[in-house]
Length: 332
Image 1 (spheres, one colour):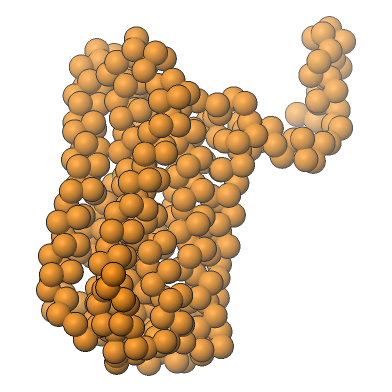
Image 2 (cartoon, rainbow, N blue to C red):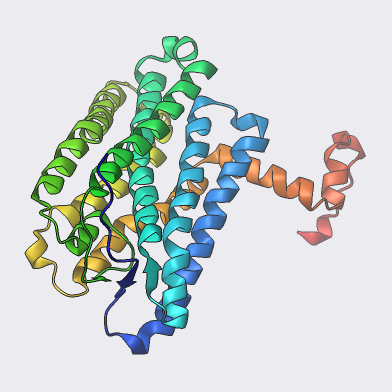
């Protein structure tokens, strides 16, 4: 058995560089983003769990996605907020590896979940007669479980390989969280093989979900365009528009960062660019699904109504026959 030859015990995350005069401003901005992100995703998760009207395959996967986004943000933000508030940028090496492992696992899991959700929408629109028999409860659980297992397995393979490297410094990392390639720069071993392995593993486990997601929406859009009436097309598109926006934001932000050559990402530009995929998707997803989704809005109103019951005259009269309701015309 090859032993881990780690020689450094702590890593200094340089964060956003020398912009100390904006530390408090950054802290407040990221604190608000973190609170909104966790609150929004947790709310959607609990709505899916407790509202029986949302016991459908689409919302089952949405609940998984919202839970993932809340965990994803909670893995990155607390350490970053602490560094901005106190100036303490130290993190233990084991904690750094753990943060990267959770981050990478959740990223890969999200790719799989978005693929599963696109397949769900494909069946609903392109194969509506087979939808109920195909997307059974057992199938949904198996697809969700496969997404989580696949995501954590990918990162575990890379983690095992990374532990065989020698990490002897320097113990500074020019980033605001422990990412894969910044971690490799801390190693004094030859990391060319690790870089190649990561590309191969990513291509095997994350490229197929992306291609399947893309293929699903090609078929979905083609099926929608064949609907003769504009009302029918609008109704069909509304069932998948929220998910399409989420997919576009997630993959668009990833491609924006990783398609730009590393040598052009100078200074803090690379770190701020990475905020596109670490902050934007988890923050916007709850708003996209709640603002564009009638069922989620109705579920939220039902929960609020249970928690804050109010006796109002119009609610009392609502259950009376029309002849028993007195309308005061002077109020109009």
